[in-house]
Amino acid sequence: MPRYINKAAINFCTLMGAGFCVLFVLYGLQHRLFTSQEALQSFMGGFGAFGAAVFVLFQAVQVIVPILPGGLGCLAGVLLFGPWMGFLYNYVGICLGSMAAFFLAKLYGRPILSLLFRRETIEKYELWTGTHFSKWFALAIFFPVAPDDFLCWLAGTTPMSWRTFNTIIWFGKPASIALYSLGLSAAFQWLSAIV
Image (tube, rainbow, N blue to C red; front, side, top):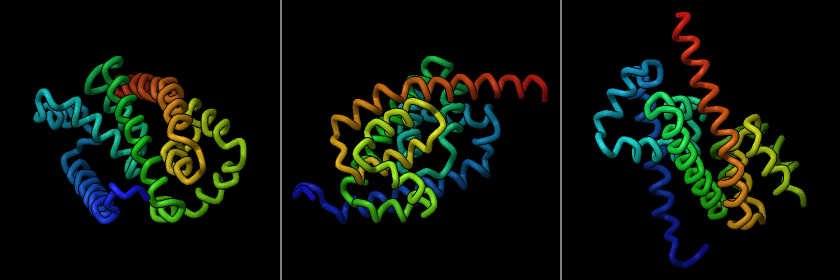
């Protein structure tokens, strides 16, 4: 590990971040943030001009500590900020979170996967980490069907370079985020109309 990185400080920040995420999910469930568009908009409105930055941070943390399904965050972005700005905030937050997950996996290695993910998931995708992992990873990131968050963590335990990872994430994510953001938004509007 590089000398300038204090592992104890990173451990502390990781623990505090996980604790904060759990508390936020409990708060969100209690105040219906995940089931009411009005409640979510009211909550985000409390941040004023910093609402977008708070949302981007939320999306980044969502990748690092996968508590809620990522699709919910994409839907929230579109409902809060509209289709275009919602897509942009989703994109930036998810890419930054993906970079953080990759960094933490590089730092801690394979044992961190066991702390965050089920053994079955690890064993299923571990087979991909051979010589063609970068190609499989790029395809999985481009199409919105694979567990992207987990794969970012897994990528950090491979010899993949930062340059390769960032190229795949920043150029591969827009299509899948657009599909999630706009597709879930259309589904939400359709459900709202019939209920």
